[in-house]
Image 1 (cartoon, rainbow, N blue to C red):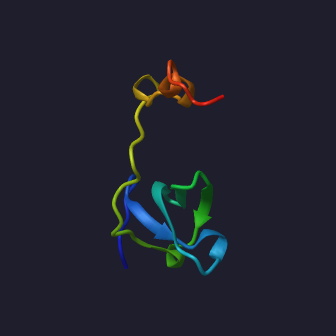
Image 2: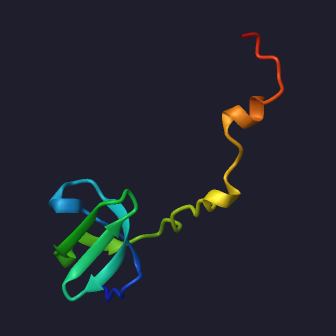
Length: 81
């Protein structure tokens, strides 16, 4: 039996469904998971959890570092309108 800790990256079968989803453990007694797709699940049975070998989710830049918007990119250009 694998011992998991809060913060571990795991895969779990959300709601007992057959598909495995990647997430991060937020509690171990009982098990709770914040999934990478934004869902959260409490009281997850240990039989539905396995260690994840996938990398951490991508870190997106802060809004201050966001790329320019289309209107900024096209500013001053003849777009044929």
